[in-house]
Length: 379
Image 1 (cartoon, rainbow, N blue to C red):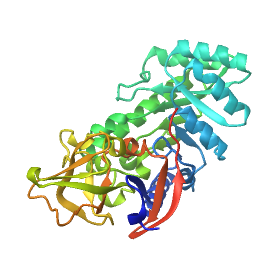
Image 2: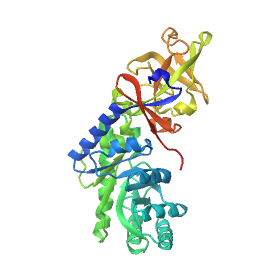
Image 3: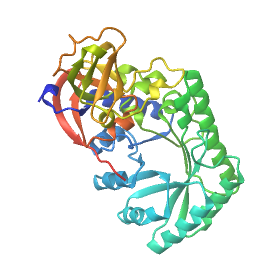
Image 4: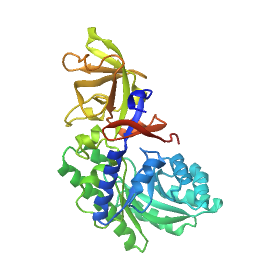
């Protein structure tokens, strides 16, 4: 089956690019002597997971318990759940632990440590816990120099239902960088926060086997990984236009696209319509952020082979199921007749992939659809 035969909108994944991206990151981190834990929050697919963990130690990170349960059902046995653990999640976590799954959880408050310890004891398990650190994103975590860090660390060691596994941070603010030099500075700050926290905990006699950092920009451009044991990142697998504009990948490294059909022409407005709207593409406008090279609207419009950009045409507006193509000059209707198909490269792969239940897999320039890989959604 060729791409022209697929219903639209469809989520297209180029396996060749995916494999190249995963091999590159695996090799880079191996060269730096740190283990690599791919983040599956975007992929949500065991087929992608198997490619991502190839050559690595086999652990992954997830952002939902549904992802953890799904991956465990498919043979993944070392999982970090990367959202602050809440007591009401513990029965599902306990069920995984009792199946023999090593699942690490994160928290940044001592009261949570005490409550999850109490419930873990009731459930008959001991939880592996990483202390989340704030390395500059200001989203979650304790500061490496704070007294709270040591208080949480002591609690996790002393409480009967928890075990201190280590420290973890995510430099999500690296997405605000505009140069490789700036990303390297953030990467070094991220590293130092994690190493400082680990050093302080060890100084009071606490074990810190895991010192974990990660974001795609810092994993791509960080210079030193000294003192770290683990790196995590996820969007590197697929890439997207935002990542290409902040130097985490090249446009040729973008493995994910949305296949859409031109469904209407509006010559009086110099526009056209496609059948991929807000649900198919997302409303992410990350390339409109200050300092980036180009605002591509809601996606970069390519021809069906994804080899050639439709010059000057962007997705200028999205409705629920419609995308409005706009042009900087006279609209090239001759290139995009009604019924023709385009591929739209996403601003943010994570958001674009979220609505789909499968990937339609191709390899390179061949437009033959070689496989359908299921993906999961929900929490």
